[in-house]
Length: 202
Image 1 (cartoon, helix red, strand yellow):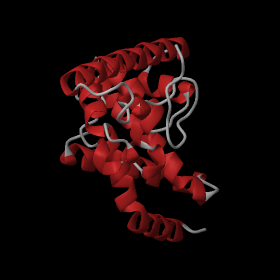
Image 2: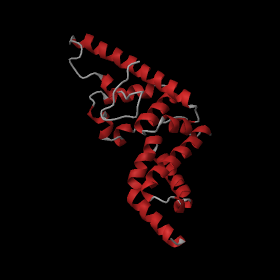
Image 3: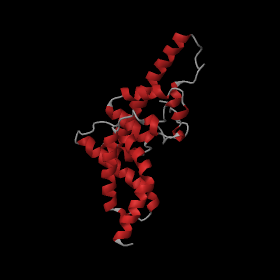
Image 4: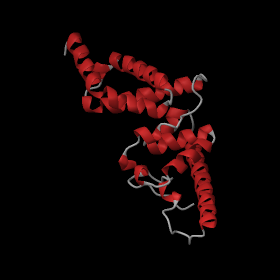
């Protein structure tokens, strides 16, 4: 393929996939302008390597990796210090199971209360669906640190959700399990999320 054809092919890819790619960028940064900058930076870097992507069906995965690496560079340089989750309701898919959970807003509130490192691991591991190794690479951590951080984060979420559930039962005088518990929202610490995500036993 000639250089001109490569450029035209890349431009067509961007035209058809830009909206989806921007949603991916919004998963990593909350500010719309930062998301635009992140996507444009990743597109520029990908354009230079477009001819090296032999299987163009993998282009989305390649570009998402570039966005994660770029965001990590920003994070390490203190430009962006965390992976925000305030836009998750807008961009996550039904397949994550969270859309069907009555306590989604509560879970997102509790995610925001997590320390930035724990929240980053939960978001990348379960909403971006990265593997443990990919999450470690993106955040500059060891695999062991990712696992222990994820375990602590999910344990903290479980504990807080249980506390909120018990308080709700006391306030409403309802029997336990008379309503869907917020624990059903939590992803598993043991595997990549499936629909609906569950909580692994500690």
